Image 1: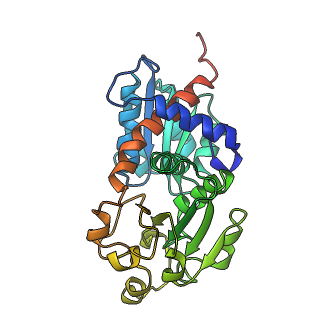
Image 2: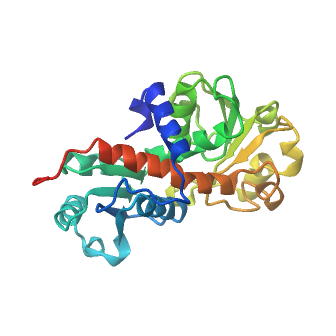
Image 3: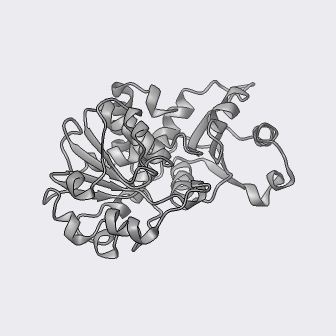
Length: 300
């Protein structure tokens, strides 16, 4: 599942289903099913919320971490997912550093493969939970002024939030230095603009999405941290430039004193922990939808 190819109606349907999910109450939807969590990259929020989502739906979960499996011995992705499938998995949730890895796995399996983030490509469940969180506080995304600040170029979250938000009518602005927000980023989705000065970008903003600098993906790019903090950190003074009821968001992990101050991250306008809570119900909706669309296993 990728946001880019989902219609606005399909996105809205998933968000409505998420609203009906209650993470505090057990659901029998996936009772007797096995969901394998195959994580080739470190993760806290995404892995935990997918695991809680699957278990709340009644499934048994199995965690396959790359560093503690045969992946560390050189086993290929296709051999790994084939092994997991043969062992009895009914669905696989995969996070991988290579763009396209979940799609490759899905093409070789007859069970659902859910993308939990692949390289700099996709993170569809994050985009859905961000939209869900916004809609808990705003009536509609149509016409909403959303600003994303930080490392746009290396962020799969930014890419797929742009696809989703523009599909549902939001006005999106990107802000960051040229090396982290090159002009080409404005072509990701229609109607996107790039502003270099944070003060200009924040003026009148209704939603502010902060992104961390993804040092693990920068390669040889050198970034002056002091200059970046001076120009692009969200602090209390800059927050005043946005609407008084502006929402502050961050997909995590947050780097305090880098892209955001603790005062703002923990402040009354911050939805950072609410995003985490909503991640469970949104991923419940994703797993339910994926399993409902799956082809039945042999013998069923």
